[in-house]
Amino acid sequence: MIGKHTRKGRVRGEVVLAIAALLAGLIVSRAFAVEPPPSRKMERQIEVMEKIVDQVLIDSPNFLVSGRGTTRGLYVQGYGAIFTFAASLVNKGSDWSFDFKDGFKILEDDGRRVIVLDPDEWEDDDRDADEDEDDPRLSRGDRVQERLYGRGKAEIVDVFLDYGDTITTLDDGEWVAVVAFLRDSSYFTEARISRLALRAKAADLRAYASEKISEEEMVKRIREDEY
Image (cartoon, rainbow, N blue to C red; front, side):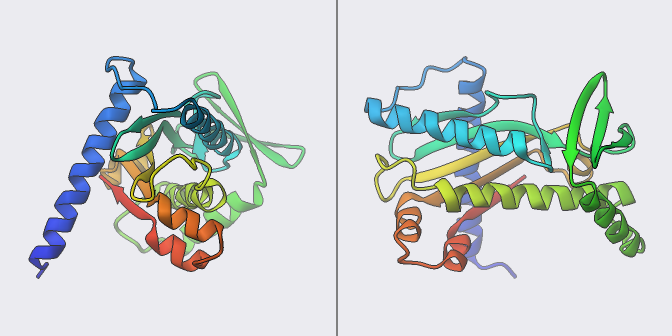
């Protein structure tokens, strides 16, 4: 049985995530006027973080995004900095066609081409999916996508570890949050996931950057919500 405190914590987390997703969606669609950051320095730091997350997504062998400029950042007073992007997975399911050339894989879908480096990782995924063939929950293709999604989340965690202290203008009690809007992959449909939010306190990110806490401890302090 889940205790009252656990239920309250979960509800509070869902509310925070819903607010973050709502604000993020509104700012991306330019349909909501959010107050600008309180200083030009914070604005520049948010812009730098946008570019960092963008580059990680462009280079990602797991997430697929439309191109540069997909990440949007905003500051919510009293909460912190929120960064949003929309993404699918590089392996969307049976609709993809595959070809190998010069040590990398070219994926084609609806006239778009995506180059994926290190196809050996795909072969490892295929073998792992075969090993899990008795799992009745997911199809073979969805099991491959599940692994891509897990590695994609790990890439975002690395953003927190490597660049989380970039926004020095945040108060210690404020958050750095990354909210992903997930789409166009059969695994997301099957798992009923359309939102992913990872967030960490600015104070924890600074403690990690100054080596006051270990990487293992920092990872434990990164909160994850998905729905």
